[in-house]
Length: 147
Image (cartoon, rainbow, N blue to C red; front, side, top):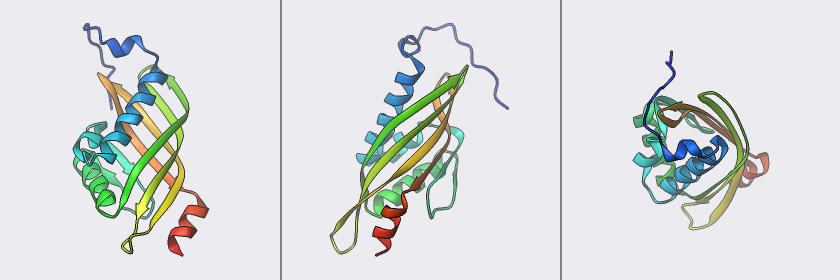
């Protein structure tokens, strides 16, 4: 499937811990989403990466991920905050677990806070890229939105 990446160039990011790199990249993802740079957010995914969001079809590949993120932004999702709570890694693979909050602006002008947890699988393909991102909403947040 994937071959180990080898490069003789020294990347300053490789001198930092994997956990620091993953945490920073997650913040880059949130910043890109919050500023409407959905293409930049999707570029953090591998070419065959997947994004699985509640009540949405799974997005396969960077273009579909970009389209899904754009649809979420157009639907009123904003102010995404990601908090990494755990990073485990071995070689060129890493797993990140965390919590998120996001604001959903509804058609009537009200804003509802939504929250939940997520898991991301990362692969170092020259740079760390997301292979899979799956998130779920807390039951409380889902019920509040439905009300």
